[in-house]
Length: 274
Image (cartoon, rainbow, N blue to C red; front, side, top):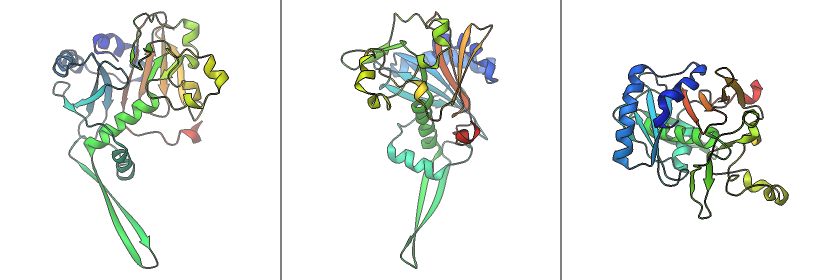
């Protein structure tokens, strides 16, 4: 959610039971402005909070000229001092998937270890140790949540002929009837299902607006909960795959955003729960 409307936005997603204290909100309101100036971001979003056993990680996301590609994630323990997270690579994602399964500790220097024994022939065995720091795990978790459950309403962003993704300044919000349909909400990440559509389906799409994947195509079906809250004035989407991800949109206004507050563990049991 945008740092400029943080106080207002936090109230709209508080129905999930997760929010921030007055001290944390006040600290964020000051530090995110300084963060934007120091790193020369076009805008700064408060991404959310990942709960740890010792300390919690507060996550902020800075965006540059291209809203989709120019992203940098930062973390903090006190909402004042921010540290840059490394970009998630394929090798890092592979290491994290093997080594870390439990809750976050709250210590970025903590090292997870995993021993894999590979048999070669009848007797020979090879021991392979995988080590990964919690800071790397944090970077991968933020990346995966953004890739799998980041949400925007249709029309909130436009893609220029040069491929630049920008905020749509003329976006006035979805109507109430449109906000009640999950077809009008998109994943804000590189599309994966768009290339699978037929020529007939592609002909009906607007390339400036329909360049993202639709939530309706998510697998498994039913991984999103859509409700109207605050006297039916706010549309709220909650992910059942990453429990703690809450998206809001106020119909007929450009106000929208999402926040994640959770333990950073994917709900792999979801297909058996539906």
